[in-house]
Length: 165
Ligand code: FES
Image (cartoon, rainbow, N blue to C red; front, side):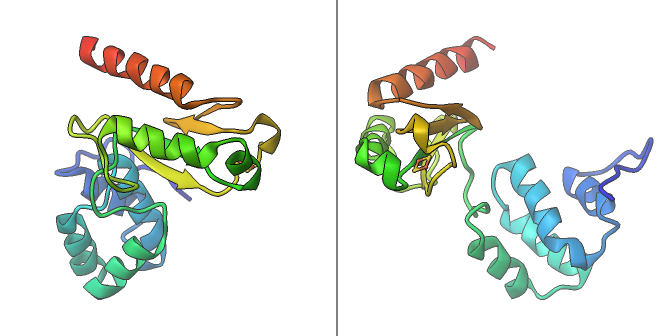
């Protein structure tokens, strides 16, 4: 179903996303997922255009964009960090890792991006690999048996990589 149109030149990524889903409002959530992936958040302008072009009330677009945890109205970091605070990870210090990493990155709330827009931190409930507790994912990559120091080391490596590229 999800097929980009061949050889099409688009004015904006949003046009491409809407065409990918045939501008059919029944795929609004899928379009929002693509918008989130592309922009790392749901920009207000994108929400307004989706509302107008798909003939969906703006408050419905915002309702979906704020209801699902996968969507944010402010930009996430390029490398999102998810710290598991499910039971097994919490027992092994997951919640402390979350607090420490947020403090070290200078973010006050979950989902807020760092000033350089490279990182954001969120808690998640059980990533399904409790045997590896405590677990953190960085940019979707799973790191088990981790700690604050190990997580911050990954952060530093990614920051260096971003600065050199
Ligand atoms: S509780 Fe963390 S992976 Fe299950």
